[in-house]
Image 1: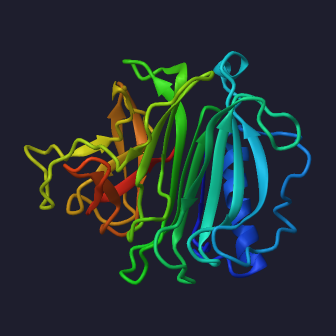
Image 2 (image 1 turned 90 degrees about the vertical axis):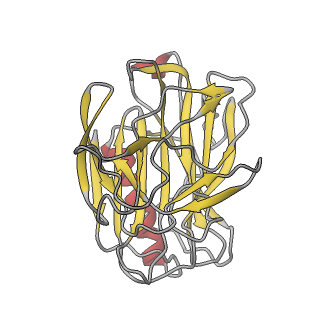
Length: 301
């Protein structure tokens, strides 16, 4: 496993240099974590890529695969497109998942169609803090996070294998969490349980289900602070992954880190910068969601 961080990236891809830095950060996180960059033809070169000229544009793709012990029997391939979100200058990833590559940026079997993972809000040249963490079986990204009240940007993505009741990886599927840029704060707004090796996936969840107090005042009680993992659903709630956590806004300060015991083992988490509008949580109305103040944290070890 490996972590990467950068205090120089900005949530703006209006120049070639900024766009290339964005691509190279993500590529470096995957490489450091042991993912394999495949030999597919036609892949985007991070050193020569030109920035997107329009909104919702993919400039080019790169293909990666996991390299854990389950890869031999339950392979996972990740196709990443690099481009723009709701505005031409807004950074975005376009991701899809499959169980094999055809050697030319296509899947032999696709298990999740392309989705947009974009920074929320307007692009900004204010420098933020970017974090990436990966291992051969997972990837977590939290880019452009800032404590500045002038910045509401962050691009968040998490992918890991499903877990059993002990927290061990299983070959049943994948747990995917991301923000598609459709909420005004920086955070996450979509979850998907992906079935492996193939089959009908359960519905994509609009909003993110967490188990923390609905009070925004400090939740500490008898030295205990409310911190929640993210719940994914395949009909019923599944054992949570370890890649992301959520907290209430007044229990931490921006960009803090902490260690928490999950499935019996200690794990380090890195929190986002601003505490406003980090989570997009479900409301009582089916298919709707609302913003919730809090911090988001990614596994960072």
